[in-house]
Image (tube, rainbow over all chains, first blue to last red; front, top):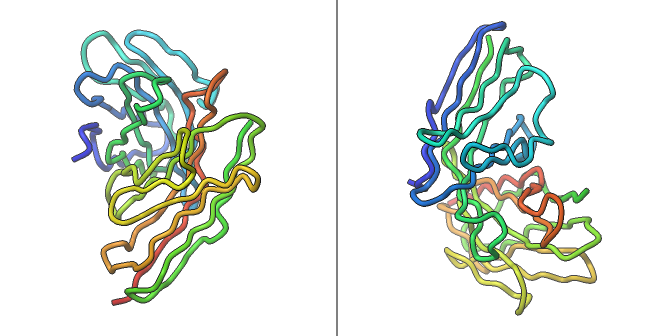
Length: 116
Length: 116
């Protein structure tokens, strides 16, 4: 158990539905990162959030994708009107501080999203 | 933007064989370097990291990696692999400072299969 909790582990959606992926960072961590892993690919950065703030969403598709990290509760990655190409593993990571050298990112188990 | 290249897609070894997985990165500045391992169905786990100092870093489970700055390489090694090392290994780089210095850029991964 890495301490970063993601749910669900597996999510199946039909085209056009919405997918909501949740991530609870490790205790004490206030920085959250979302990555997407397409089949046969490495992880690609999507978005970096701190509590109530999106710091960098340069890796997010411009449409249908959004992320939040509210003051209370987990971080949510939302995909609206899903398409087959959204099928992937979505990983969340957290850290104490993004720039403190001895604080690497710790990853959750991922959510495997399948679009029918 | 930085990029990471892992030379081998799939490596098959017998137990007790020595392992070396190649990783090269491209980035013009100072970087932090990481190797992560992903066991089947599990989260990414940090094997080892390089921030500064001795370019030969030792990680968990008997793994080590050597940072060769002139070659932009950070190869992973283990003298004698075990069946339990069967997993996928990802090399990752992060800029030391500046814009995007929290973004990990991953290679595509190398699948290691160890035959008993």
